[in-house]
Image (tube, rainbow over all chains, first blue to last red):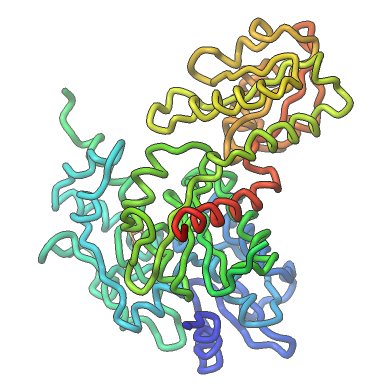
Length: 210
Length: 270
Ligand code: SF4
């Protein structure tokens, strides 16, 4: 049987440190997670249960809800002290849902990216209208929603369709290998529901009034 | 109770892009069931949040996976969206290295009536049921979701027990309207239980406004939303009104999830 927690632990012992905006530090009693900006700060509010990760992950510094957990707006000012790798894994699953699993699966060659065009083609109900999104609109939409600076930290593994790329974002945004070795790549293998919802809004806003 | 340490459990919820309340009961259930050590691993997956239904199988170590939808009714999400997003066929489905066993939604379980009765008794302790009208409130209007049908089914089950003077179904946006509760109910005591998975805008704000126990003040409710449940009972329109939180926050849902897993096995190993 596979053991995600064990693989995470192996990575941490081999020098893995950063997951998104979080730094994972080895301590005497186990592990400590902080916002990487707070790595050297004192006076941080201390938490000690992996379940605390959910409320820490849910709100940004202004108290607003973080619907997209890979948005670069993780809140500051806390440290989460955890006893073992199992607790680190569960906490990271709250901070960056699915990211450990997708990263390991990608390493094994099991991730099959889905073209954005196919993601939209699959939609039903109120999202069916997104099938009208043009390639040009998709390029603008993705450049805005997925941009690392202010949008989303993930590396994009998919194309819009065939060889239609997203030329408005830098090439590193699409290269998993561009992540430094001490950082876990956060990988997007398929356009998320936030992007699909934004596509719906764009199609509605930009279609000529009937 | 069974042991399935070689299997994984995935609880599938709706989730929300607007607030964390929608997924809270689903996460809590996962924590509760994980704590019991029945499954080798327990995960959540959502339609509107991450981990998404498209990502979750990459996170599951064990090959044998039960998926239980944490939904009140069988409808668009349980019949179309979840199977489509996971890539499910009929019965147990092989998806990559996983064998996925898709169970019935929690709201379908016969024990819902019992949980609704428990919630009603807790919110109005010592209040005699024979002098009480019990409302089960569904969303309504969401034709594809059949939430109105599900609420009516529970009302019929509870009414058949003959404990409450009357048991009524009501909806937010279709008749019978919960806003008319005082005209619909004939008893001096009225107990209202929302038949929803999560507490959120509907249970914190919309239904209280329709009942007349809160005023419409967008945002005000977010300060201390659960206070609406702490102020019971309400005396208005000549009645005594007790308002409960959504049924999905009931701890007994953990057992319902386990039952839905057992029911899947019973159906497919016979
Ligand atoms: S589609 Fe992927 S990269 Fe873009 S915002 Fe969603 S998760 Fe981030």
